[in-house]
Amino acid sequence: MDDSLLLGSPEIDAQHRALLATLDKLKSTSQSKYPEEALSDALSDFGSQIFQHFVSEEALMSQLAIPAPLQSEHRKAHERILEELTQIHFDAMDGKTTDLPDIIAAVSIWIKRHVIEFDLGLKPYVADKSSSPRSAEAPGDRMATETPRSS
Image (cartoon, rainbow, N blue to C red; front, side, top):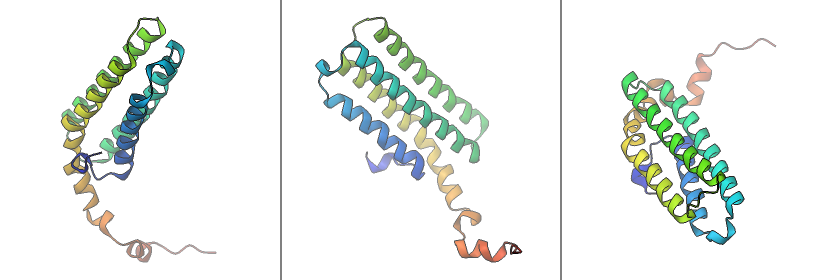
């Protein structure tokens, strides 16, 4: 993954890498290894992976000082991607032939576009959070201010 697409959130950046790695793995697999049932399973697994990523991303957004309209727009973008992926999955289950390379190309575009158009907008908020006094304090500093536990 291009470093310019990193947000500075280790969890989200790792998930983005994992999503792109999954797409790359699917791209490198020949169509013959994905009969209709296997294609449906692969789409289901990818759908679960991306859903979990969106849950994590929305949890992060809730922790940051992001304006409500921006959060709402971002969540709607997540919904659109999930709806489109669900439609592709339903089509595959119905036996409508869609070539795996076409599916992977479309999904790759959605993911990359989403990162560029929406996720990179989170970067300043992630940076603000990581530079806040509480997150910048050394672990020993917090321990010095905590009340000692009695044994």
